[in-house]
Length: 258
Length: 307
Image (cartoon, rainbow over all chains, first blue to last red; front, side, top):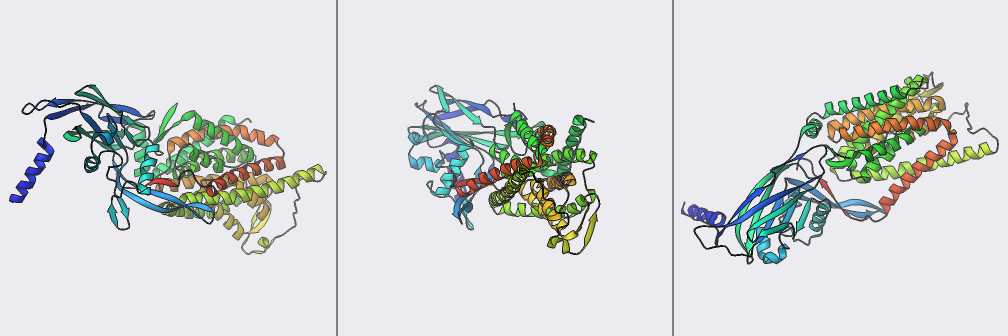
């Protein structure tokens, strides 16, 4: 019982007040809901925030560094590597990334490697290189070193699709304590709940942390079609086949010359 | 104008897709084929995943072959009995194909299967068509009839049991080769997202000696039913048919097909076959190139369903 109390006390200290919490973060998101409609081509969300002094303790200690990590719904994604077999290239080896975020953006006011030491970044999972991406290797699930070829390929491919990104310029300080972060949502964003984690550093130390969330949803017709295809596959297929027949028949009526 | 595709999960330019539908429709109307072997690679090229492309194209082909079948029906250039016989096997072939498609998708080898089957089929069929049509053109140049039709010639296929008579096509053949052809077309169609018209037409002509008058119409009926059922089966098992994409493709396709059919009717048969042969062969070579040459990126990603 006493051990539990001590543990709890530590957790409260770590999460709440923190070791040197002289600052508080107040953030607000321009939009908590991104609606994917038929003309959706991507969107940019804006996160505004200020750094406020905690009234009970010492005043502010600028300059500050801010890192915003946005991560999308978790998915299991397989990364495959092609190898040459009998003269042709086939998918040979593969690794499964279990519960990897389908979207991951690490936005900061300067490159994360300049903000804190490598150890700190690794511990706090700041930056694409330091984010935990567990792989299924045989029966085990474990994170690997960041230079592991499959992990590198995975991050590179996700980055190419615009789903993963790390930007050292996406956060701007309007005044030493007021900041703005641009969160890009490319057209191919997966739907689901996204978590936003905001970390404030000064002098290479984490001093405050807050979180927020946003939601990407399909709406209207898109939602309807996607749901129908998933839940009523057979009926949906029949409807599509019928649509093909109607259009085919319609064309032959319009173009019939005799 | 961009539109978001709900199943493919990406936005595409409506006019680009419509244009692709028109162009492929034109070619398909001209040669009396479905055009899936052109459409599927085009869709993959604009970023749609191979699985969604294959599944969606089947509905597009169903639409354009229905238009074609109606016009051949009006001209009475259709052998319903033969089509039904081929179909009964075609459905079984399609079901087997969809089953294998699902299985290989789980094993990560779907891209390979699609690639290899394209290369083998397209290059062989293309080369055969080029060879045959060039010979026909040379023969016409020399003042001989373009086609060497040997009505009396019998192959070993005609010695098989279960013989059936197809009145409209004026043939008397065993049910076994008819059934086998139907199965192969259904199977190949489901796996490759092609109607198989470019395969079926030569098979019917060379193996069963179906006269040219009824062959295209009959092939269209078969294509229509196999592709319509492939659409339903793909939708029911893999949930990969994108109705919005299908609709845009269909509209372009049926319009293009009408104009293509008019051009096709003005052209000489052997020229038409040579052109089609070249086209088929070229697409086959393009796929061969992709398989043999080292890819730009050795790695690729796949979302595991339900993950």
